Length: 483
Length: 117
Image (cartoon, helix red, strand yellow):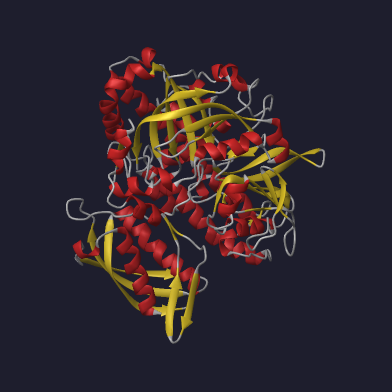
């Protein structure tokens, strides 16, 4: 295919190579089918895959997942791994919403048991979990020392405050706490933005969705994940709120200077970075860990209010609702992980921006409960269609640094989505499909219109056919609260 | 340059809210720095966004008192956000450096800045 301005070679039905040329240090590889590739070429995302390939110390390939679309600097749906001695770390490779991620909860309830109470349930969730622009909890404003403990301990802090149990931590990526977090590196501004926002959903594409298992593709693995057909599930999608944004913003400033200092040639200012082993690189990783931990605590607290909402709205006891965590994944993060490079195990700094870790069975970091089946991967779709549960594979580990897609990926900008929604009553349309939605603003609903996203099924099919994840179950929404 | 920076502030709050409902009740002076014009623009808008988010204020007047390539002093007028009176049209989460430009064309200043919503 050579239709656009990029040289693209087809590797197989689901992979495309952008061969190394000019200042590129490695090839780019994009996972997509033929139709998707035509769409992908319409925006700047392939240029961004190329730009990332310029960065010092990049190992393997500059990767794009099938949900790729243009982002700030690095594309969303991008994966890039860097050598610890020669490579760089970049806040743009993580994104503004550090540790934006997805958590999946299972319940002991069947779809039919809650079908008459959805209205009460969605209203209860909406009033118990603050959402929207600048949302904050009136009942909880952290003191500064307490906030710093959140940044160091993440979900473990939340558990110590009575939000959930220790056992739940085993079902969270990194057990809900990335080591090496140093709150002294967090600016007063970031701390101030974060203080009143812990335990809130925020705006944009963040949500809490109650749904049910609509399809099971692998009975055996689904059983290990605790999922069965028609069982009620809950998906929580949120991140590190204003604190993460401010950390990113603060460190972009640091990195613009650092890139100059270390003579790193940047094709785009937003790709600013510093050597991993430089003071600036190490400080970013320690600050990023703080924001990531804040996000883990945030999802842990929201889970607690989800449980309370179920008990209140459905008049059930915790032993009846049996809400527990399947897994919790980050999809905006940089991680130091061991990977195989030219036959040797080597620690690398893997940036996943709009991409999810997908570790195989038996990997040391795949949680104990899922050792036999692989790490669960949670792929939310848009509010009108469906979401997927996948597991990681050996092929992902060997070809994409153990990474896969993260969601549907936008096809219409927010402005275009608003236009497409003009004059329509989106909440009403969804209600007619049997999906109840509560949102902080009508604008959010319009921007999050189903058609604004790629069909998540097509995205998931590509990663399944390419072998970098295995499809286990499909979830369909019943009710959703949006920011 | 003064007008450019003033208009950029106005444009940002015009995205956030309906500025016709905002009164210039309070004023304050702020100083912002940056390594060059482009970064100064991002830092200026980020400062406004920070004040808006943390102190819950809506600004509608942006008077640039003094500006150089790497520094500005401005007087802002606006009022505290009142949910009964004001609407939030769109929340802006961050001011980005993506495709950022500040340039002079035919004796007029022109800037492009992309917000993360």
